[in-house]
Image 1 (cartoon, rainbow, N blue to C red):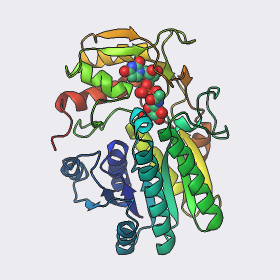
Image 2: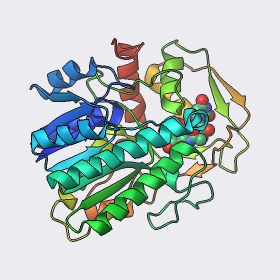
Image 3: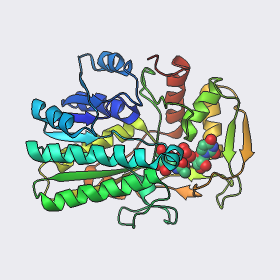
Length: 338
Ligand code: UD1
């Protein structure tokens, strides 16, 4: 298939692009490079051992998105592009609604015009809200606690409504748990702009000396060691989930499929700190701090639907996730150059 990968220069998009190419697909990256760096592209081309077509497009621009789809004969879209920092979404909600909803609306309109039948969407376990029991199942009700989360809930709804109106449309809603890790080569990985919000990039920056210490947000949760537990999955397993979902929905009788992508096994903050210390070979400085507002004690997937319907399972271990993150971070202490 010829596949448009929106946000293909970003963390999950770049790893998925490589796997699409390895699976024999033709992947075209569309990115505005607002939160990614151009130097990822030659690194991807080196890993893929072939040139990769890149279009610099702002997907909130309807005319530009129409032109992109008109020109290229796509069979499917994988839609990663979007803003994803929870704290920033609280201070700049309108940017989050404009960019995240706007890009999805332009893509769907352009897909309808060109007859592109399939879209795989980057959703998040954040759509289960703050009161969901664990493990989380796809049929649970959705809600959110911040504008970023609401954009995911709303984009899922937009995609479902578009499918009702167009019986030829096939949609996969992929609810990611906590993606971490990097490609084994250590040449591509997660490079958040500004101060990271998430645990793994913060741990990696402490390990490499860019930050003094990690603040552990709360050790009084009702969990075995008192710290929050999450379902971390390797970005390479996550990328494989996209390839499987794309194959599954093409020509499927089901119009909208929702799949959790996680391991089903939670790991605590303290366990992650220990695993990362093993990977980098030295102790990491940590300090217990108050809980972070909006955090929940535990979040982990029931991944059985993805296993049954996609034949997909996350297999890489926490130690592999930390070792691969460390290889990337130690080879690239300041992330991508430009
Ligand atoms: C966060 C977002 C979530 C988003 C996801 C992916 C919040 C409240 N939630 O999820 O909406 O979908 O990222 O981008 O921001 N931790 C520390 N110290 C730190 C950072 C994190 O102890 O400096 C802890 C957290 O309290 C949590 C765990 O590490 O228990 C994982 O945190 P994080 O990586 O931010 O992911 P989520 O909170 O699951």
